[in-house]
Image (cartoon, rainbow, N blue to C red):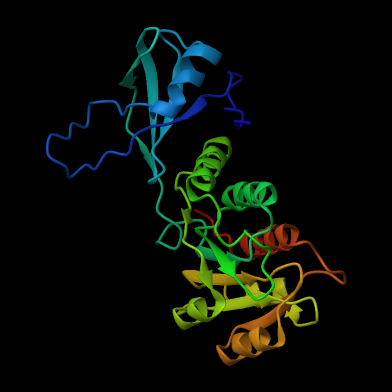
Amino acid sequence: MCPPRGDGRAPRRRFLVEAVDPDSEGFRADRAPQLLAEELPHALKVLRLKVGDVLDGMDGCGRTWPLVVSAAGRHSLDLEIQGDPETSPPPGAPGASLPAIEVAVAFPRPSLAEEMVGRLTQLGVARIRPLITERSTPGASDPKHAKLERVAREACKQSGRAWFPAILEPMDLTAWLAGLNVPATHLDASGGTRVADWAEGRSGSSEMALAVGPEGGWSDPERDALHRAGVGATRLAPHILRTETAAEAAAAILVQCVMRDA
């Protein structure tokens, strides 16, 4: 749901718009961005927007425009800009409310994975990486990338998040560790420090990463590889959690511990 405006009026509806490069040839600051094609049916047939209706247009690249409908047809919608766009820095940049957090997770089955991606997006995770492990759920190592991106975009629109997260290509644990160059931890039900204690010691970092294994747990060779790479173990609860529960809960704790005043 959209947050209340605080002035007694109904909240402005959010729509996704095409990203426009201000440095591109022919760019005009006074030209309103266009709704994405996937947004038009909802705007025209469900909400039945009409001339004078106001909305916020989000491009997923940090900009949100205040817009007003200037013309509405059966298959088209013309918009005008009502003011300067609100610009948010990307995660990890100066002035951002969160560092760039990557969650590398052994995906559960597709329906659960989609819900997980939506919640991680709402929490503010910058990058989501499907992680291939020895005990990964069969078929989960090759998720439907386009569908996950749609889920993430919808979560951004619902939550008001200005930046789309990056849904990365699947990668096995060995390769992920080889390219790791930021502070990182992994969840392990067998023991470790508390996630909150690890996070609070890294509140000044601009980037960090979290690895979440499959429901069958890490294999002994994987645990050895994680420790050799300096990715220490952290724990969440006294019980074994489902993968998506663990990923979402740990991400929420990280966000709470490292959130900054924007």
